Length: 264
Image (tube, rainbow, N blue to C red; front, side, top):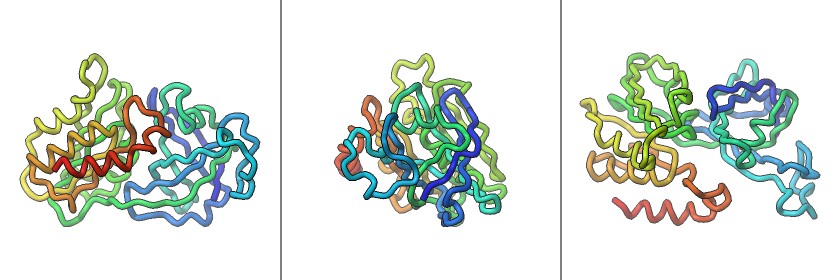
């Protein structure tokens, strides 16, 4: 299906919020998962393809001009208005999705499929731990909005600096620790070291850890090996890998995740 850009808002220097409406959103079937994502297909500049398109339309089109698939979290779905909100991480004119978001204007079209997803904060635990970077903030934000009133949540989030912190409303009893890469030599250790130094609340909890691959892997190893976290109460996934392009990361991600499973 496809939809059109209704509005574009710069939330932080590195985060752009785009609200989609119209198009075929009347057929959108939301997921109950708070980490629900769509499979968007971004057209390279100068591509002869236009939205909407079919697979037949791609016949004979050079590979570099074909749509590039990327997954993006559903930040919010407004069923009454048939509006879909997606938050994009954008660092300069890098990548197909981030650069598209920076150029986006009302009326532009985006084609996608989905959504799919698997995590939603459990109602059967005493508290929740959510850990990640900018790429995980849309899912963390959606999860916080779904939290029951008064439920305790510990969030640890790493961003570039104080200007990249987001307002994350919730009815829960939420404590957010913001970590800043600015001025830090070993940025890869910042997030796992902070989680390792935490004093956890009493009681049962579930875990949501998503973001940069090496950081997620280190946090996962600590939680499973040192904190006794059970994998059936943990949603842990690497979204991206530092120094890798999206295409290069997609090529090795399956092997990375399989190797990560052998850590603990």
